[in-house]
Amino acid sequence: MFLSQSKKERFFSNLSFYIIKTSKLIFKVSVITFITYFLLEQFKTGLISNYFDLNILLILAIIMGILLLLFSKENDSVRFKKGPNYIILMILAILLGIFIFQNLQDIGFFSVLISLLSIFAIYTLLSLNLTRYD
Amino acid sequence: MNSKLFFNQLYKVTKLVIIILPIIGLLYLVYLDFVPSGHVEFTYDFSKDSPVLTNLFPANRLTEVNKIIKTNSYWQAVKEDPAYFEVRLPQRFETAKVKIVYQNKDQPLIQIGLRTAGEAEWNYRFKPLENQLIDSLDWSVIKGNGANLWQRKKNFLTVDQFLDSLDNLGNVGAYYYDLERKFILPNYFPKNSYQELNKTLRGSYSFYTYIKDETLNFTFKIQDINRSEGPDFFILKVYDDQGNKIYEEEYKDDGFISKLDPASDPRYIDLKLEDLPEGTYRIQLSAEDEIFTRQIRTKQQYLTFIDRLYLADSPEYSDGFIDLNYKPTVIYSTVARLGFETAHPEGLQAIKINDQTLDILETHKNYFTTAKIVPNYIFIPENDLKIFGRGLMAFSQKHFFNPEIFQLRDFSGNLDIDYLITSYSTPLEVNSWKVNEVEFDLDDAYIYNRKLRFALSIPELNSTNDVIPLKQVSVTLDKSPLTFKELISKILSYLKSNF
Image (tube, rainbow over all chains, first blue to last red; front, top):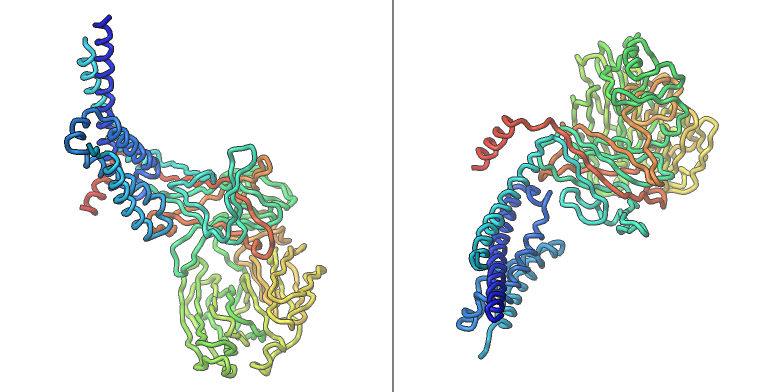
């Protein structure tokens, strides 16, 4: 029984490790794909957006990024020593800023200003919240 | 296999799939963008923004988007004419078919226009989506060969039969259908004598004339009333029967630009063009309403005005012109749907169109009526009136001819036409919504930023409190299917031009 419990624990530990690694991979791939598709869209408007909503990739990347920050066991030791993963935080903040910009484009120049301020605010808030002050 | 090994293997497979998916996705999107089948359809149903078809604009001419209760359908209404929408083109196409689902009870004409390249900033080629004048004809209709044939008496069973007999038929009209027939007046001979039209016309107008082995010879007597500030120039243009501009001349202001200046002395503008082939020519005077044409003198026999006449022989203008002719005017017209407007109390009057009477009781208001008989005589007792509509007018029947018989812009059962061939079909009605589509050739389409622009025009809407609800807008684009050779050459030329 002791052995089967430990087997169960190992199984779930490996499963959660698999999920976290996969989430990290999805996060990276969705960010890179979003940037690539976004740049291709600048070359030829409609190449991507006529048939595929880029917001899907954006939202996927944001969700994966949040999950990674909250549940990444891999990062725990790093977090306790050095703080949150600043690269992921920065990417997440930028993605959210892009999302905000896309939804505020109608208001013109202020959408850029608001997006930049949002990036700064989100990054600051997340990095403060995820820092341990032990 | 222990779980660690299993999940490691599974991760490898997952990694491969996750990395390959976007690449396959991109290849698929590029494939869709090339439209290899040559056919693509985009639809906007007002439920959410479409990435390909824009929302209708401008917003101030439209109502809010509303939901139909207990359904997943949405609609938006046009309350002022015209409204526009654009469609993004993934490739270059040959034709575009626009299908609209809408409601209309009282508006006699709804048109879709494609923005085309041309000299004017606002250049649209319109085709009818709904024409109630034609729909109300009690003639027989047959379809075939991409056309509808309306017959006063059913003499042909198929459109092909009709087209085979075309050369032997008279009294044929074409409405938005290319019959590829040059209009020639049989038994026409030029005359060597002058005739004068001594009617005062205000502002812009255009007219058709016909020549054969003669000089195109006109003299216009022009005066500027100088009632408003600023210079008043005008432009004279001549077009051949293919719509090609063959002459243009701009005439500067008379030198008086203040509204306190008197009316100018008459200026005589000569237009003489020699060695022109036989046929119909359109002469257009583009001017503000400050410019008055007091007389047109010509050797040509035909002078048929197009769509608009602004009669100005009225005491209203006696402060500027001393020799106005206040006699009532009679116009010979083939305009099926007539519009009238006056800007002054002097223009309030009762107009007669054959035995129909129309009372013009208010200034700055459009009055519309459908002529019961076409052609007809319009009796205008007081002048000072703008007459407009889709069709032709002349100051006497002897000056009238109809070169548009093969390119009619409206029709309500003209007495001299027994067969009407057209690409227009009556809209279908489905659950209280009408559906119809209009096809455009994109050869001369104006494409800006890879977008086509369309206009939805309802000419009489602005004079009423009516609205036109729309439930769906679809655009179907077609071209020849893409061959592999063409695909490679497209990629190579794209790379050459960009790198």
